[in-house]
Image 1 (cartoon, rainbow, N blue to C red):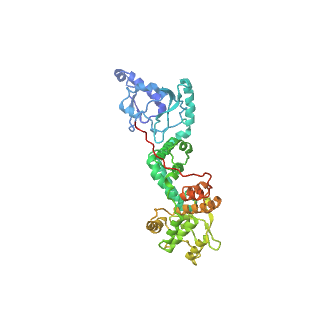
Image 2 (spheres, rainbow, N blue to C red; image 1 turned 90 degrees about the horizontal axis):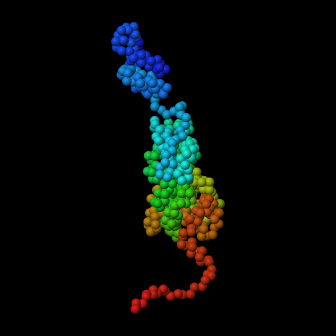
Image 3 (cartoon, rainbow, N blue to C red; image 1 turned 180 degrees about the horizontal axis):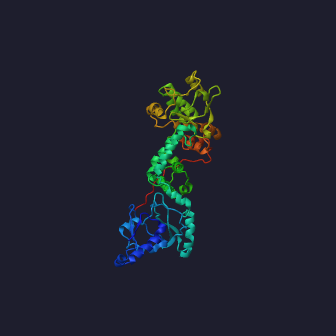
Length: 478
């Protein structure tokens, strides 16, 4: 008796092996013993393996499974087990199937999802049964799947990418911006002055809502729901726009907001809630300057009131930017924290004319200095806004009994003064550094003094005689 040892198995030898096993199974024990020259097949186990189902072309081999022993089952397996992975090599493209649910036709298909080794089944609405038959729905479904890119190679390759949540994308974006600030400085894609507010929006509005969602799951539908919720919370239109803009910047794609915002009647103009009390009157500004605790604070408040410069522009103003003999100031930079950068926009780079009283005050304050910051800290570095508010402005406001405000109130007040003085709007825009006339209107049209000043110039066209107070008439009870 000869023995045939099989230590390895090739899929190509399966027909030969199957024929041999069938021959062995057909023989009775007596016949096998009688023919001593008949070869006995033994299978030597190389390593434990799990058998895969037989290929379609060799389905007959499945009948052999009960005949094979355990050692054979462990050996009849590919020599190198294939890793479970989706592939387009054998895909011909799916057309989906159509089913009716209620009054709608739904198309079912299999989708490639990132992070999954299988394809979950999904549904897409095709249309109503009132406008199409099931046959028409079947013809329309492949076009819908083509539009979704279900059968495309790009869709398959995208499913191989690791799953990225919004929190991971946002954290990476923040780190990338910090790296750009360290390497590129003022040429970074996000300005230093805007970066803190953008991080605040991400942490306050975006992460709590989209944090655990994948970046691909955040679409227009989710953005529309975000707009509705922010509107219900009473957020201003500009706030909602900024939140959606920052979301698009982090994800690298834009979203439509105009159509949804027009549909929401709950949106309130910002002026109704937040404009009240954002400026100082002329008397209040004079009192604040006179009550400043030291000459530096007095120079800072006077320059803010006389120019309408932003706080970041004031802190970055250098002696070289001031030409007192011509009574002008050049605005060329801004400061965020202790770092210099460019101004807010192209309109912010400007020349401002100043009056004689401010010229004299700055001449006394600057003295013989030829360089450096006009209003520096004790260390010669730019002022920090938080220190200015805490040490200089807010104590003065509390002493004078004025509502607490920030340095930006001086800017609002300056625009109001210029408008009420009859300065042309284009000149105000040039001095203030704004490109929109709406901003100028925002600063002025809600002041009582502004309306009364102009109403006094309007001639009376109707003469009104005195009128008696209304007396309520009560029914006579009989």
